[in-house]
Image 1 (tube, rainbow, N blue to C red):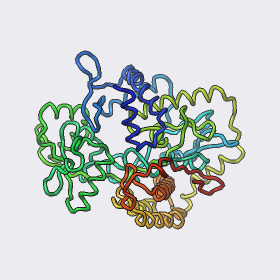
Image 2 (image 1 turned 135 degrees about the horizontal axis):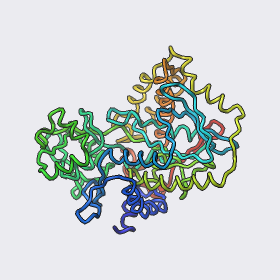
Image 3 (image 1 turned 180 degrees about the vertical axis):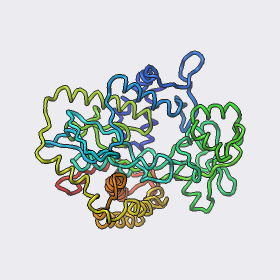
Image 4 (image 1 turned 135 degrees about the vertical axis):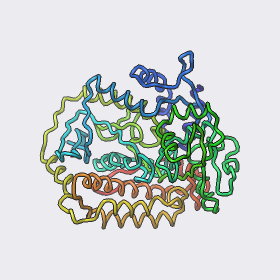
Length: 471
């Protein structure tokens, strides 16, 4: 592909709030890493001549496709084969520091309750973004823990109010997750309650293959105009389209079969769609080596600020590779050994503290309060100053009155208490940054409908300093 054109498109998708050197690195690294993944056993859709088959998706560029969960299995097996130790079912609660450096992490096992202390010469955060635990598949696992842990040790965070996607769109009443990129690429269309293909009205060229900021904004406008619900119609797709969908999205397609949406290899019904909860990504600010301002702490994927890493698995792979190499060099150059001066005992006490309040607020109660505050489409998807101010006041009340009262009956609830603490912090940072940005940039703000490059072609950053937020 044309490197400069692709760089421009990705920079534009971030509304020009982009670290273009990192994005150029991502583009130049992507093909070699793709080849590495093939050698590790990941299967991709290939042409008969063993070149990668490029297929339509959202956006102007055709994309390389993989076979669903097989990618995860292949990469996990490769990691095991080369001796990477994997510790699963662990809730990591805090990062360890010594003299201002990151020197590991602590957490508890969700089955045994054992407390773990990881001593490290370098640490990489790869903890993703969050949707505030919305109703769609996978979102219960997007917990914002990385943002909270990095913030509390003084890392600089950025991009809470901005992303290349304000939200995703998924089936509203069927337990099916991501896949819209492929359904639209094969020719699916969106219809409003009047049966109109409304995307033609807003985006005449790309229509349903427009970027997520456009799709989400147009969904919200249709709802406000009283033309909801919105459905995906794929009943016209032919056998070749369906065969590719079964290859790329086997789990969603089988789920559709189980409820009669797909029968005899063909879509029989329309599927209602809606935006997910708003994406929040106050990611760690990193340099070209994916190092943060905290020595020995690195970040990759959507744990980074949006300006550094565009969303998606491709950018997760390239940033992860660079962060890993940088962390390895850092570890080799360091001979420091963590010496416990009482910090571990303090963090252990904090980790289990909600167990002493078994009669306190249940995490789900606080989560519902938070969701009712930030998920409605007219708060963070269609923005306006007074609405966001009201939402922020409610979040601050949750932070001050509800979070301190969180209680846990067992280890499951204990994990949820820690997640709620991080989600409330993330919501606070997102709303404060969104209120400050008095313009429209990727995400529509109704009281400031135009992009203001004179005053707002800049990032909004925040870090904790002396238990105070420094913006």
